[in-house]
Length: 189
Image 1 (cartoon, rainbow, N blue to C red):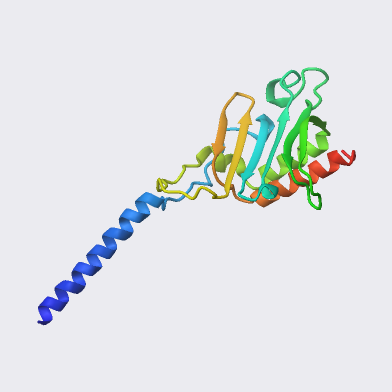
Image 2 (cartoon, rainbow, N blue to C red):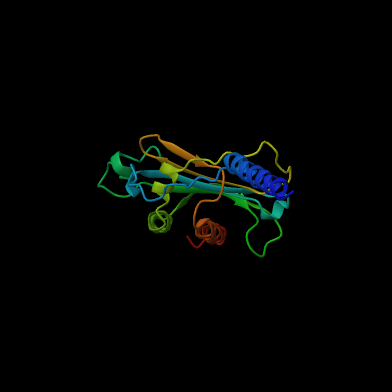
């Protein structure tokens, strides 16, 4: 009788361990490398975008800051007088305290505003994170009204990294883009 109870406990333990292993493999319990040296430099960034899709449309946003392709030379410098090339903001969201969605056509921004974004990316090691990101395996079951996030960064050599979830410190990027949108709408930038 005691041997039978021990066998039952052992079977349950083995089944539980097997189930946990299968779930970990399906869900993707893998570490995302973040400490590797980045291939690209902050001066090579020519586009950054973030987005959020939400069941409540007033929580959705899409933002992009892109360097002008006509003016961008090697390393993101314009070929004339070595000055920064032009940056353009576009996107759409419900700005804070507003009831209507605001959409932005490509709008020029100051080089100081672009420098703030590049500082956030550099400070949070976002380039290395994007270059070394491995998407976890996901179950093929999902909620139709699931909130989705995206992040994209593109470099002057044409290399683009797209991440379909929040990146570390994404709230800082969101804050930056919302503030920039508010400034542009009010004519401050």
